[in-house]
Structure formats: C-alpha cells, structure tokens
Image (cartoon, one colour):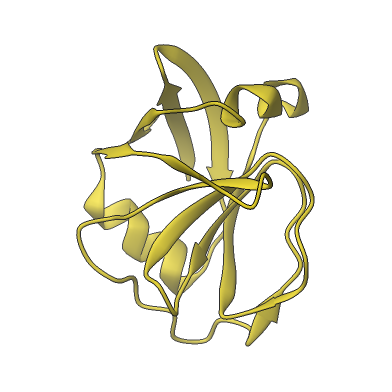
Length: 116
C-alpha cells in the first residue's frame, strides 16, 4: 500500500509492507497526529488504538526512513536516523524518497493517508 504523509505541510510518499500491523494501521487512515522527538533518532506519534502485531518479529533494527510501531508503548515511530535493535519494534514501511528523511527530524504534525 502506498501512503501520502503530509508533514508540516510538505507531502512525502511511503510504502507499507504486507503485514498484519501495517494492514491494521491502514484501516485507521486517514490520521492526523501530533509528533514529538525521541532520542534524537525518531519522531513518535500515538494512533487512536494499539495495532495488531500478530506474526510480527520479536525485535527489529530500524534504518533512517523506516516507519515503525513500538508495541510496548503503542506508538508509531518515524526514523530520521538509524536506530538500535529494539524488542517490540515492528517495521511497517519506508519512505519512498531517501532525500525526504530530513523533514522528519523537526516534524510537529503528520497526516497519514492512502495515496491510491
């Protein structure tokens, strides 16, 4: 599934992988969420409910540009730097254009919608 992310008025494209958690996120779209920084590595936001992570790996190592879900806290994570291997982290997708990663570092609000 292709997504359109609108971050502080700038549109970016992303692609979701085929997983239970990614499909569950897609069912919540469109979403507009406030974002905050976490460890100068990612911007996080909270969807209205926890996602179904059935079948997800127990841990993941995120790369800059990854869109992920941190199951223990129930937050979405948008990585603008590579992250550490993390139990409970589920990769959902990735930004299409690597040059767009810098926009994530200061993002305050994000709108996520299907771009189909």
